[in-house]
Image 1 (cartoon, rainbow, N blue to C red):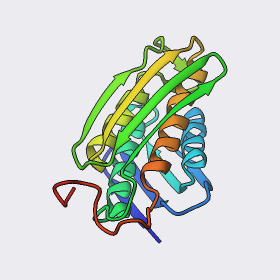
Image 2: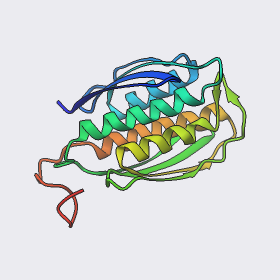
Image 3: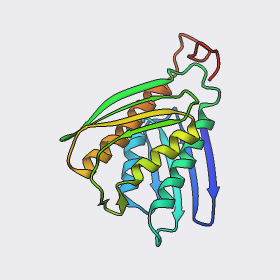
Length: 194
């Protein structure tokens, strides 16, 4: 099983994440931020990832540290679970509709971190989740996991729908990229290494 368990403790947050890339989409999430919990559950379900997240953060300040640090730890868990990245599809992409919202997500487990964020979601809150924190979460994941990630909003007005499409789309694209392909044993690279 391709699994990882990562813990990170700072003066601002305490995060524990367990990730299984070969799961069935089961999630147990507790970050103290209801909407964020919902997004991580949706991400896990659409990527067929088993995911456990236990996070305590300085929510009396705001959600920033908790969300960003969850991205850091999730990215580290993803990197560890992937190992040397042999035998995986490496690339995944999807269009994810959520009512009026449509988001395109494409990613490459290239070991070259980069985020392109073209999601024009109006500023504000969804529950206790600041909209701008979605970008910070995905940037932290991309940097720590070593993935090239493009997220683009095609349409949408409702903040909840737009953000849910990004998290589900990321889960779907990631689930495709981490699939093992029995046709080859090495890494999908002309260099022979990622």
